Length: 464
Image (cartoon, rainbow, N blue to C red; front, side, top):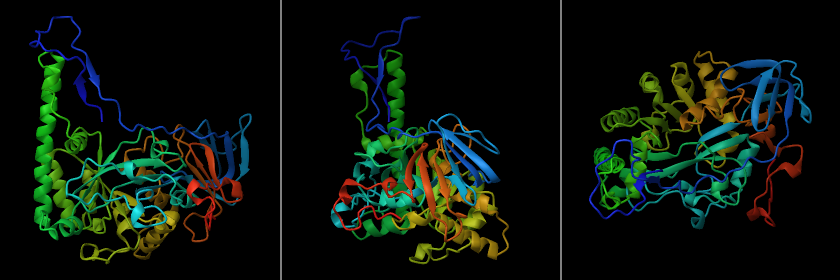
């Protein structure tokens, strides 16, 4: 996160600004661990005659999708293939945007799932906003290719939920890279993982430390935010005085990586992804965010969002939810299978998430289950609307909806060609493109990524 600093090492008293003179040189700290992602090679591609769900809730029958140079060019009828384009017959098939999982731990909890590979929770204190999930990501995790076979083109890797402030999350393009930075999606904002409820109070209460209750959760979060506000004020004051020539470089506050992440949230540069199950706790978090001066972007595991869907709509907060996983602990007890469709029907932002290395491979089926439950209680939601829970809505929840999440001209060509209705249990992705590059082909074993770790292992490249 850039912070303004003075580069010079002046030792004299601050000079009075001179009208028309340039202010003292101000430099910024270079972006740390910047993305090294490069779009993989692709060719212009025209998919013809398919059923197209564009990810915004629209459906096109027997339509064409054209993409080139990594971007969506057009969705329509009777499109002409440009020179050098590959044309594929989509008759009887479906085309959707790439599936986005807003909540994943791939790479942080990779396969094989052993302690030596467990790098998703920094369980050494309730406030660990200084850690970054990307520093624990193992890019050779075979789970990435299994997710790709399920149509996942983008995924957000979050730290775990043991802490009130669990650290920074990162959005990845689902391509193999030698480093995590090779996968980091350019232009995607970082996130701060926060957690309320049982996990923080259990982990630290058992150690005789705060928080040991929900009261302690909120109190410690508020106290930490107050410290972050003070930290931001110190930097704001320093930067203002430095630009006016009234401060020395040595006046700059010492960097504090915990506070630096929270400062990024207060400045709107880092988005809050908040693990929270119960409706009353989500309301408490919203009230606290207003007191502090930040916005929650998405509540995760929000099994009781249906109780406050109107509030979430009013506040413009997305809910990341499972289709039917609830009741496994007290704070998840009051979940219902109609949660996703109820939130959608209320006009709020509904998102299907996995939080699971297996579930991410069938996220379309999770949406299908929730849609079925919604229809059973009388909600009328079209298939092409429901696919938004996998595409445009998670893009909104990650702050990347202007880049991906729908088949609109100019957006990144993250595209899935399905061999049937994606909400059928029998449908599978036939081809998956990331930024217009064909990264997975069910009909061509050579187009199924295999990580270095898998070479020579049983089940190598076992992606079907």
